[in-house]
Length: 331
Image (tube, one colour):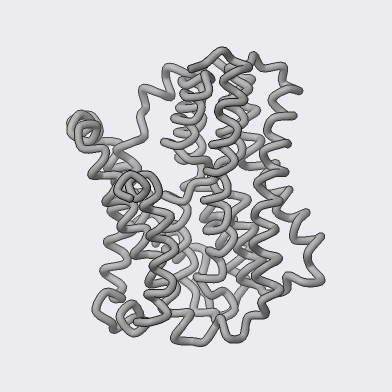
């Protein structure tokens, strides 16, 4: 049991916080014990400071010359991903009509890749670890600018009840860019400490993410959002997230083949192109979508595609790693 919790503790926590929000929603809403705006803002800030500690300029310098791999990964992340999300929305438009769920698919499509997972999976599968680390780092830095712009221009700024683009970006700079940059700067003297305490930092990050999920669902339960949501739409959203993962994985692999990458770089391109970050994506969503009071963009519904995508990408990766390792001669 202990071993299971160590390996799957975060997924168990995700399954626990939603019922907890249903049972005690008043605790996590504004004015509740843990629902204050300053607590949420502090949590987001801390997440991105930790994220900055994990991003290394040295990795960018070491991997900068593999241009074909970098183009392949960034096209998969920021071009193919959003296009596939839009195609899925077009295909499911007769059923998936809720604006927040549809916004969640667009948000999932534009997210950068994971840093730790994509790099670790590439390593275990015998892939190009330096290339994976470079592209994971680059996409996360680029995502800090790309994701807020897309969200505010296409998903929030058109709503009369939302803040303006300028106000929203100012909030992004304060809550995301400043702590991320500070973490990267502090890496020069805190990097060794962070490496020594990486398990504790990973657990702290997981706890903060679970807290952010909890407060997002607390608000939706107090406003009876789920009572108004047809079960068919939720089922389509969950199935759509799985289909999006499969399509993005196939597209990333085929794009890497079209770029004629060597086997080790094929592995890096697959994992960097198809993985989507929950660690940066969820707190970024909290800071971005909390800027609007529009009830049709309920945060908990926006997060549904990402929360469905996260465990499925881990399951798919677990199946792919040994298959890819045989191709590359990895461990």
